[in-house]
Length: 561
Image (cartoon, rainbow, N blue to C red; front, side, top):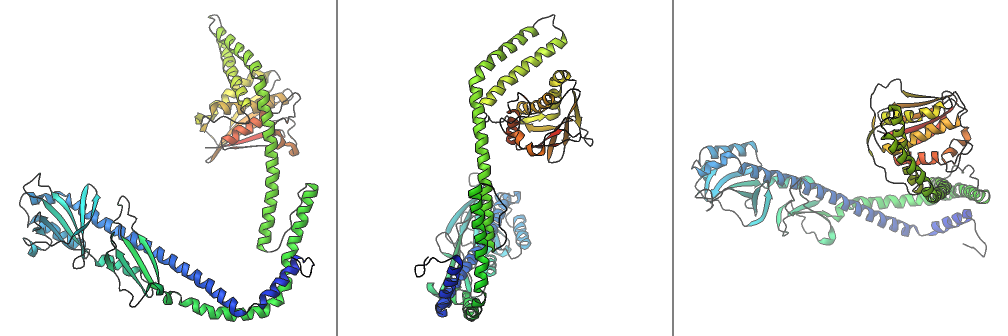
């Protein structure tokens, strides 16, 4: 923005904007504030009405589910079969009377009627042999193997009926009828009312079922409406009822009028004191922005991330934090791209040499298999041949793994005993370690006393991880040293440590050892530890290196249980 052809600073812009703002008529500001507050309050009221409507219709669904379930379960009781043997005014009527008494004011009457709507058993003995007048049926529900019919409200009651005895089984057809007291619905509706409001419950055809006292003389523009439809309860799909709450706008928005007067008074006071704090506020805002600008310029020019500026308003601190995070993400993305490029080179190299490697591996495996068939071969020889067969198979799969290094294959996760895998790795490398008089030790943590430790892992790839770590230690250590493979189980994860008593790894190179093509061993390619970390991360674990208790190197693996 320019002012008289002169570019303004952020500080000058803030002061200019504030000066213009205070010149706006206070009446307009108050009116806009009042309108926004009124709209926000209206939305909040509508949300509140919607929430109460949903809660009320949910209560009604639950209540109707219980009532329908009661009738369905009663109809299947053995006592209901008395209607087929003529015992219609004794045991069955007594049972219905007890039910009505137990449910207090829930049911106004319980009846068993025949196909002509004649009462043959009732919770009130005086009604036996009299006709039961039911309104038109307006809904049908299937519940627990029973079909239940609901009828229009009559005399403040909702009637529910279901079949007891089918005419195919006896000479007559009988029904159980329950009159549900409408006051139960009205209680739910009355609990929903606050202030000057009304609640209406309608059926699927929008005919009123129950309502509180409606507002007198109200029109659509004078009220706020909110509706909620039946959603059902458990396996009960509901009755497609709809509940509507109506509230007077004047009553709902009364607090906003009082707020308008308060806002007007506060605005006048604010205009008087704001000028006193405008300059320091502008200074507080612009100074952190200037620091952040300098921080960004230094990073762009030198590429070195310095300490980010501190202080300022919350928004400025959040912007600084977001900018710092963006720089960290950029650096991490650059590292990931470099690592991905290296792994892609690994895949290309492995693809080029796969034929040359797999051919001798296949010859070795075939030769070992032929030797194993020799009857004069000793047991130790057969064991060695078995090692050759298993290791050549593993090497063949390792070539495939290298080819797919940029696209690792999916894990074959199964429950496997990590102790057995670890002991097998120690056995495989004993001969290699003996050449340099290196002693391999397998240990469990002092507080562990287990024979098996089953984890959900890929046994083949985990074998590759342990062999790689142990073999690295054997190759880099001088003669007559020690390597320890220690497993420490815990509640949340299993920890595997491979430690040695060699020279160790300098602290500034401990993260680099997992990068492709980084190696501290003469003749090393630097791929082993990169593949190890790739496998561990695929298992949702973590691996890091630290100084061992013997001042050598110690690789720590943590795998989730």
